Image: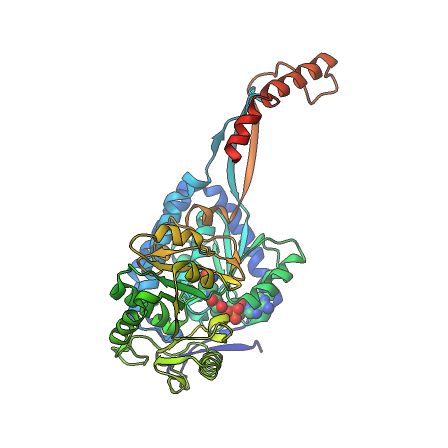
Length: 499
Ligand code: NAD
């Protein structure tokens, strides 16, 4: 008999759903079906695909609360937070469908003087079948960042949801099948690491992974066996910087949401806060005032739910205890805040730089707040991590300047995580946070390969790539290159430019 996987409600331990685990053969069969669907889908063209995706968008919007309920059951997050991630996913799907042709369709380029007899253009062709492996923390928004953009680019998708949220994955695939019952454009394969590993080794054309850095490395190694390209969206250790001229109540509000919402289980959540010494005490007062009453629970009115993955509770406990043992001061909560299923908010100040709470991804409702003498030090500390996913800057006068100096894929200025809700902006990291981009034009291109086409319009004045080439052609060519690129007069200009 096939083995089963039970998804559980993390707040109560109740069984939410029972799923059959997919093995290597099942994964290969799903990919083979996707291959057939991808031919039909790619031939449908941009307009046809947009019509289908717009219909799917409608289904998702009309049944949003049904899906939110399932997200709530499998992750424990409040219904309103589930609805928020679904709503944003729908907006991304709409953007991808609307903009696919503009971004990926043929773009003329100049053929240049040497090849003036040619017409030249580039267009972005779908790979075929994309494997997507997702996490549990935003079980709709995160995988849809790959799924929606891969589909809009003309690919079929085989998706392995997290073992903690399989029901949400199945729901998504079934909702698209309602619109396109005859072509399996989006299928799920269910299981643990083994199923994910089988998907990496199946006959897919690209693998989009979202999850931890450690698993990302395994995924990349498995895909390397067949030279399958990968997109890696991994963990983060995001910093929020507070300048001396910042709007402090707004900065505190953003830090609290960024650190505690979704029980801190956000890849681009706020884990470290660096505050200018001139406003440090005032900022701490704001945090204390605003964070009062923010709490975890399963009841209506709770600000966030349980830890979705039981094992993460021990990581959070270790980070809090390690920081306190090394001399950090608790401003809110402390070791006692870390319970069995729920973790109440913890704010630690003066946290030593070698604490795990500063160096490793905590992924819990905790925040470290440290004082800096100026914003140069804030930038230096923000950058002193191997992760580089998102970041936040609160500054009235220096926002863009500080944002550019932070090594991270995205920065929000004077608000928190705004970049995720703007479909035209690419999302992704640097360093241990991964590489490649979802969302926006870059996110569409990620699921395509660039196809360059040169079409001869008229015969060239001299044939350079032919054995009928003559010595005179060669001499003319050398002369043309010398005139075009060899003028010494350009050197002083270049030197001036480099100075
Ligand atoms: P995880 O790495 O444990 O699992 C992610 C997925 O990989 C799951 O579906 C899992 O079953 C699968 N998997 C596990 N081992 C595998 C293997 N050997 N081969 C193939 N697949 C395998 O991560 P998680 O706990 O589900 O998610 C939390 C992590 O995800 C955090 O680190 C968080 O920062 C990160 N995350 C990143 C982003 C982003 O966009 N950068 C978004 C959300 C979450």
